[in-house]
Image (cartoon, rainbow, N blue to C red; front, side):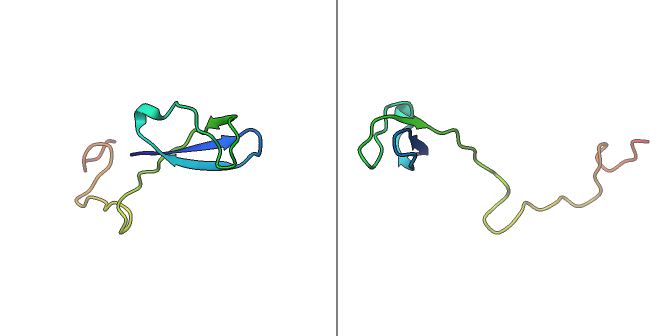
Length: 70
């Protein structure tokens, strides 16, 4: 299940909820009990594996697959 971030408009606190995608737009009460909350837009960075960045392929490269584009 994805995690969604929310901000409370009453206390300005932020919090996260683990919920199904089908419930992403449902109201999410603040942990302090406030009801006026808004879902935050979050981004996910996909930059390789946990062991480091993705390897660079060997054998040339460039826009023409290793040849000269000149």
